[in-house]
View 1: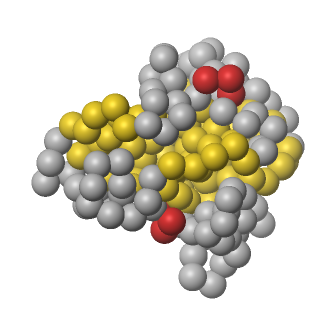
View 2 (view 1 turned 180 degrees about the vertical axis):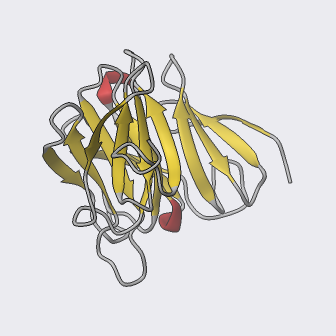
Length: 192
């Protein structure tokens, strides 16, 4: 249905849970749109009241929690990750706030779930990756601005493999760097 509740406006990110449900971050609708494994529309999570600039969505493998990254903006304090119940859509908590201190963000871009349910967030404007436990408690961060290995210029997206290694794409360097779960650089791939 072209005008139905499952219609997308400006999709910008997606993720899939272990059951095959598809979660799409729609920056136009300011919501997460959820489809079943058959790609039939299931539900919407969030709305205009919840997001300034929704930029990505991550769901835990069990399909219990949805992590929606709000990029914020110059005039917004909503530089954060909003956590929702993936089934009911209920708001669980917010992680982070605007700033440059421990656990704070300046233009967060993307998030990924690592070992033990840890949440890794690309903090674009602070040129780092910020790590939280499953309950949203700040653990540590890694990276800084610069041209050396292990540093960032325009970090954009993040992914995590089975061993918990962290992959970060950097648009300025034209590469991705691979880190241990603790943030030690293992290698980089590609160049501008």
